[in-house]
Amino acid sequence: MASSLVANRFAFVLLKTEKTVAKFHSFPLSERLRLRPCKFKTKNQFTTNCCVSSAHDEKYSNKQVISVTPPLYDYILRNVREPEILRQLREETAGMRGSQMQVSPDQAQLLAMLVQILGAQRCIEVGVYTGYSSLAIALVLPESGCLVACERDARSLEVAKKYYERAGVSHKVKIKHGLAADSLKALILNGEASSYDFAFVDAEKRMYQEYFELLLQLLLQIRVGGIIVIDNVLWHGKVADQMVNDAKTISIRNFNKNLMEDERVSISMKEVQDA
Image (cartoon, rainbow, N blue to C red; front, top):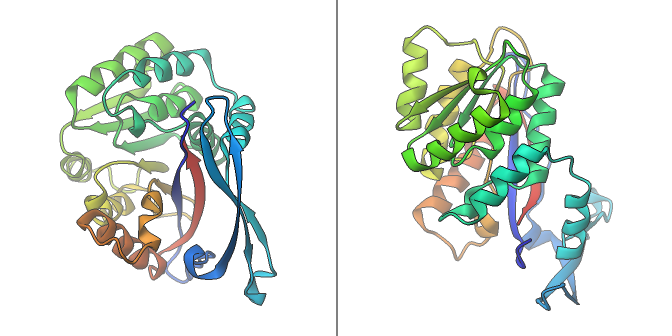
């Protein structure tokens, strides 16, 4: 595995009725945590800091939070049930440019489990890359299920299509090559609003608000329970650093603020360590 760990965070969005109010539980780590550093070495003799953090505000009940160190992350990965076809795709992708964009096995396992818990039949992925997360989802969809996979990079899609075929799930996947926003708008114009159960977003960060609004139209709104999962809303920790104000970071901060105030949905943000 890689020697460094990058902190990302998923935002889980649950569609609700108009009468319900969104609730979100989180805290600004940079302001509320006391950090106690310690050192360790990985198998690659890479030395870094790990932290045991204590939320000292009384309303957080002095809860301790540990960072995910490389040895601990190795342990997590040893307890991931990764199908052989996904392992092959992951290893092929590792040698490609931009391989850091691929979700980790523990993330993909979580996405697949959410689809299974929801009993989803129709899913959307915004940002496919080489298809690791979409393949994980397609593998657990029923034979009658459908996953719309939106990706603008043709070269990455060729790898994804190869593995959809190898896994025998090509019939479940509808590839949309082009700008994701255009693909989502086309689905709506095609009369597919309120017909999807689940969506995963891992694409252009400055487009998150537009993707979200389009997906709200596409996901089931006639009942409570449609889920949107949005990756990178912590953005490598930059959102909590007020000294970082590039366009992508600002757009994610604004998106998170809008989501916090959006009473159409219930939300939860979950920190995930992404190697």
